[in-house]
Length: 102
Image (cartoon, rainbow, N blue to C red; front, side, top):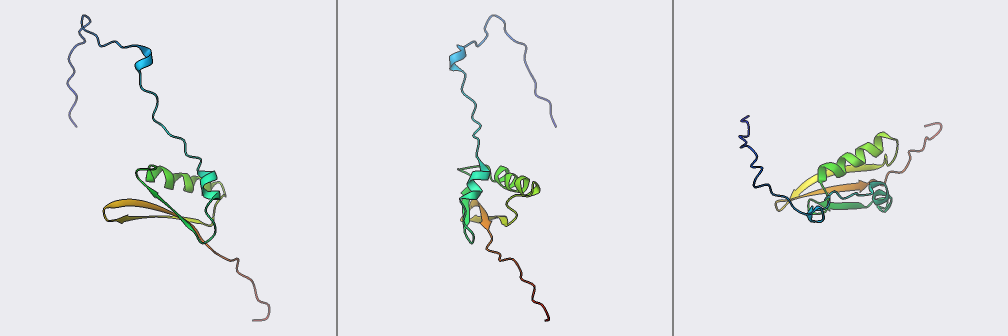
């Protein structure tokens, strides 16, 4: 890896702006717990890179699952026509019933 070559600061020609001109933070908080609650059993939510970071979204679901929540959800990725999509699937699993005497 190459090092970045820096020149010395020119104290006579500093680029100083008003504090009001500093751009705001661009982080967006996505409430994944609330998002997952909206997906009905047997349904899937499709997310695109334009909406969220697909890596962050899948990590958020896994984090909630490690805490014991949303165990019946599955996350999978697909590339359709060059566009990456993340599918969050609320599986429609019925609990298995034990049958006595069989």
